[in-house]
Length: 617
Image (tube, rainbow, N blue to C red; front, side, top):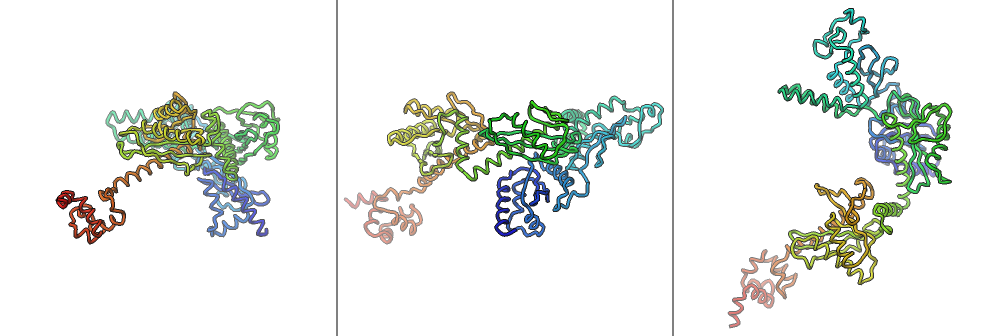
């Protein structure tokens, strides 16, 4: 490979890396033949993968690996634990050349509930479904032992390996072991615990292992409260710790389950124009994801989602040579596949797999959007303006937005600021500062009306273009006083929105209309972030202007009021006398030595008007 080809390869790879999400997941590196040469997991995919391409990387293995990479794919998941599980499966399946871990065939442990007359519960790495039901695997071994400990302490399943039968109990073949005497077992082997009671306990234990912990939490809470009421505080603390451990339990994977085997999962997400669709494909074998890809399809004849999936599913299955008997899809399809059945899950592990597939499709859509917006930054601004227009049902695109805010301390040095955004970007040359002139005291509503009145009266006179949207830094009250000026006084038709804060002084909702209604904009969305950015900017602008004015006011001295005493004279006086008090007390000779006769006489007569009158007499 020559230098030009290598630079082209690196540019292609860095383009992929720049659009990776900052989410947990797994990533796969491919060589020029399309063979997986490395599989990795990451808490943050973007940070982890980009680290391979830093110039300061000095590890020989890393340099060799990077030199072999020709393509990168990835899968996003909900947690680091899920990433561990997928990495484990992929390494064992593909045995990539540059992976050195997890090639020995070992797997993460699972929890088994046996099919015996009195089931046992224990952890194991050997999966054989003939012996019982398996839950997991668990990448977090500490959490696995925590849940096992809870089950053992709450339900006390037997730990012995005797093949206990009903006949053996009736014939009294067994004896109670030490675990019974220690209180760790109910001794069903000698009839101390009934079969029905034991099976009920096991049914609840299975619910815990499936993630349904509420019932067990309720039981533990009742025991904790009962022990506390009877002043058995040590026992209450023990129940509390078990409750907390159960509450914090999160080791059960939402992705992998031994009950799911050889399944295809498909989901579809449309882009904003609905001209393209992103179809995510996940394949599960032996309870673990081993393939995950997202494909982009372009509609030619305005096909529906169902029609697009009808075409894509057979094509994708053929490409990956899948013969899965079950295909998970998000909605009903009107065609059938030979030797396979479609399934629309409503809950459980299969529903989680469908949600994961949808998450990958949405992430791929987001990556493509980011890539396009990076090449054309105006595209993002237009999208946000269009989104705001749709949310507020505005008559035209809100290209020109203005926002106002007041600032004062108990009515003193009252000022206001107006910031202007054009195409969702600050237009600082259009910012305006206002000294409040007609309002006495701390009256934010009256101050806001004065500023809005002055702002738009002047714009009307100058025939300047009016804004497409006004945003008030406040709730319903601020919106109403602005509307009273804009619509009732000036007869203007400018849409007015408001950003309201919660009791923690955090902006939490967008208001629009009269009477104002809350507009459904998620607080973590890009649109809400740009709106709060506008709000923060006008607050910063107004408070900065207020501080400047207050600072000038506080630095004002009596020397500033004396005509004929300029800046240089004041500096000379302060340098010599250090304070205004000493200047006032100085005699005419001292002042003359600093300023000269004329200015010294002027200054002395200002501070000593009585002496001046006597001199006149």
